[in-house]
Image (cartoon, rainbow, N blue to C red):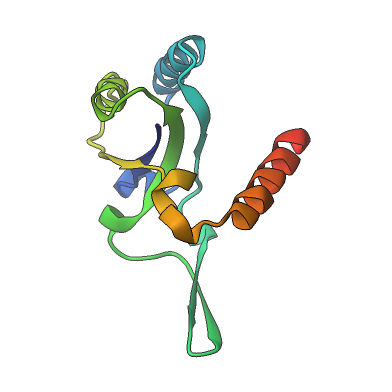
Length: 140
């Protein structure tokens, strides 16, 4: 099972403050531990919402709103994608995340897998998806 761990933004991340050397070192050790355990698939930090945009689609229109955005609670400052054997294992990895000086929150969401789509995900659609994934993996 794959899980996305969403590191929620806070006042510091939205102000563009970068982690301290100690926080970077602790996070590096955490990431290295996940890599050695074969759990970490991807992970990155994100710039503040002032350097982002929201794109809304509907009724044949596309609307772009550039940041910054209000309310840090709904914003994401970074993410990891991990592979775990269970929900419980994923939560155990999250609980091990190093804590810095400031309060933060990590939202845990299971990634939808091909079998979750049911019959609507036809063999033709599966083949197309597998081909695209292989193409992306070849560029990594």
